[in-house]
Amino acid sequence: MNYQHKSLAAGRWSQLSLIEQMANIGSEVERALNWQAKNNPVYSQQAFWRALELLDFTLGDLKTFSRLKELARLREAIVDYFFGTNQFKSSQASWRRYFLGFFHAARRSRV
Image (cartoon, rainbow, N blue to C red; front, side):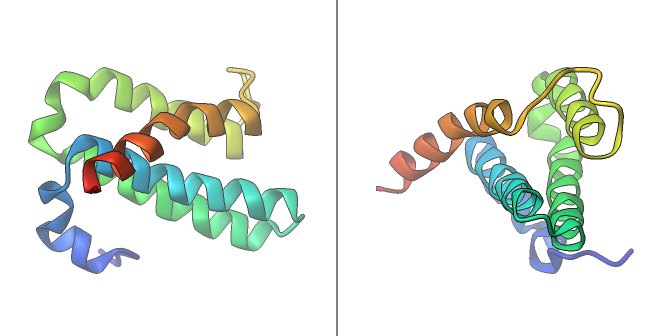
């Protein structure tokens, strides 16, 4: 498989805490939203695929088993927002709010 995040695919991803993983996923979603707002669908789609790849790494990580249902729903909602009919009525603001707590928690844990 051709991964965008090769070092993370090689095992480094599982060394990160769930909060750090979610913050990294959120960074890619944030990039996708920013490119979408700048009316650049190519870059937005590329960032979306990177976010999806990271989310799939998290779904495959055994330590996240207790969060599997929530992570699978998150994946479904993100795909629906960017490529579906937006049946969940997501917005740029709602995605930013969702990931904001992970950004702050990840930054706090580094200090």
